[in-house]
Image 1 (cartoon, helix red, strand yellow):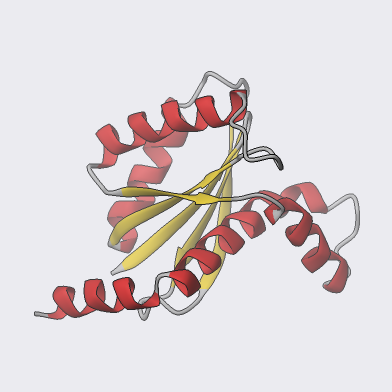
Image 2 (cartoon, rainbow, N blue to C red):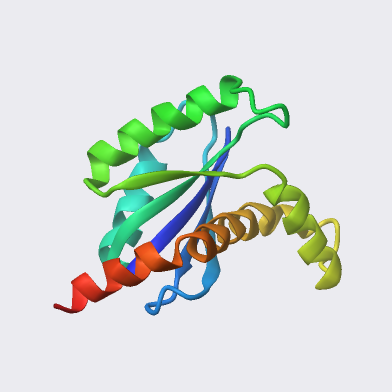
Length: 151
């Protein structure tokens, strides 16, 4: 059993997965699109990963503005959530993703990843931050979920 973290953007979707113990999040990949509205391949790839990795829950980053308001990005993300829910049949929880991209860049600074290479990593690192924060804030709930899975 695993949990997936997603950082959904206008042309990319960063993907991260938990380990089987639901303790750590690892960056997996970035799904790229030619245009913002073209998400069929993105949904298909996520569905494929969910099946291969025994994903039971998806944590989707919610891109609120710094003043807590919801802009166009939130509306697009919620529409994506509805399509993803229909496609996978999995529960999807929303998690505040403010400053995760900033944190991802800080991690890349520490790892000394060049500025030219950052675009290859930033969204999947942000997805792993979204997932890790969710797991840390919901340990009890995840422990029950894991226990129910072993019964």
